[in-house]
Length: 167
Image 1 (cartoon, rainbow, N blue to C red):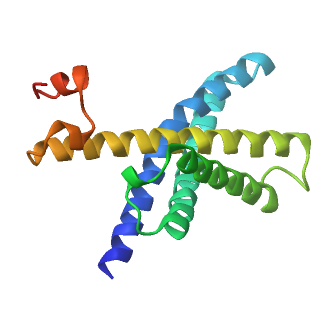
Image 2 (image 1 turned 30 degrees about the vertical axis):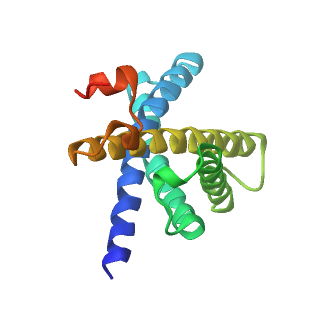
């Protein structure tokens, strides 16, 4: 039961992190659309920021579920970067596919639907890369706080000096 609760908490955390990253992208997209098509700037910008934030939350949760199902017991430092990014892309692809299937974009696969699927796939891959970078950074800091040596934490040179560890 405890492991299940940790996975749910992790999925929520990843979803919120992705939402925080996707919302500004949505705001910029909304701003550009409002400027090009002469729509009300504030309303469109806020709507797109909220929409992308919600999609980021759902996409992060989907990614977390896919990662949990496929990589199960592995730690972040045991996962390769390309594989992790591929799982993020798959999560984004699933998110785009769900949006089209649910009819959020219109009936069937249209040009707009293809753009949404492509965009969500790229955002998923990029968000996964950022998630892994954040997780590895947090793991390195935890190792340093535990008093473990710099080599195990993966810190050498300037990074080791930044965290207050001499070479």
